[in-house]
Length: 411
Image (cartoon, rainbow, N blue to C red; front, side, top):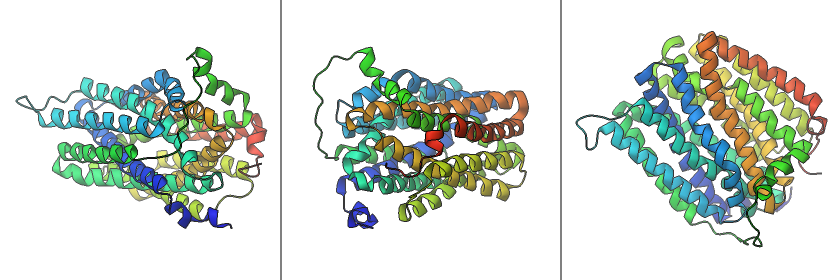
């Protein structure tokens, strides 16, 4: 292995490491925010439908604005876009501190409507953050190091996803205000780190903003069957198989473990994902990446099926960790292929398309989980989703043979 492929060299790239720490801080804060918002929403309304609406309200801005955000990421300084989005999320955390503590009121003024409005604002900020963040990595590291950098990025994200909910659950003992205050501090730190990023930003030649230019990323993905298969696989697999929105119900009513257990359930997939991402940081996938991608999605679906049927807390934690490890294999393969198959002047817009698909699979998936839980119950919702994910993996192998049969990351 050449020196440029070493993990040590990755640590020497100052701008990359500052962005890595910014991702770590902001992701931890975002996870804590969603744990606290989800728990407070369920305490206020006791409704699976309202938990699903939290996801839907985050997805709506992504659907409306992410393509525009991708166009901005291809024109403007990506680091500054990220910093501004993180600052906006810090303002949201400040509002939650005020609402929960009752600043200017006799008591707290937290409500269902406020939490839904907060979800809408978080979705809008992340709609602009994600395309810029995804498109930034290839500008900070050499192309040969991108697969390793992607795995290390994912390791940092999963560390935050583990630490965020666990820390949030612990801090929740002191009250929701303490959680939101910690989120505020972490988001401000991440925004400052993003502002310090320096890379060679070459503004593109001036061209009018047209519908065709905004939709160029969507057109590019549609014409590339490999990319279309990769992003749509994530969309349908996680849309059907995700159960994040229902975790408060499993924690409170089925497993009966309370807020601390909810934090552990939220963190469990990230434990598996972190271990897998660390392994992938050290040992790259050099062959049969398409087959590994499809197998990972199938394992994810099977894990969620077992989780839905489980009534034992430790078994639930274990299969959620397995689902996280499988999902990490999928993430590293898909994200690396997307970046390597896309020219830089298109990366913002292609990343925007990918962000829409990710947002649809996560936030819209939370709404789907809440809606089906109303119809079939939480267990039925998760079981049906797990079976659906297995069917997606089998179907995509036939629909997208160029993806399923891909041998290496690079041609």
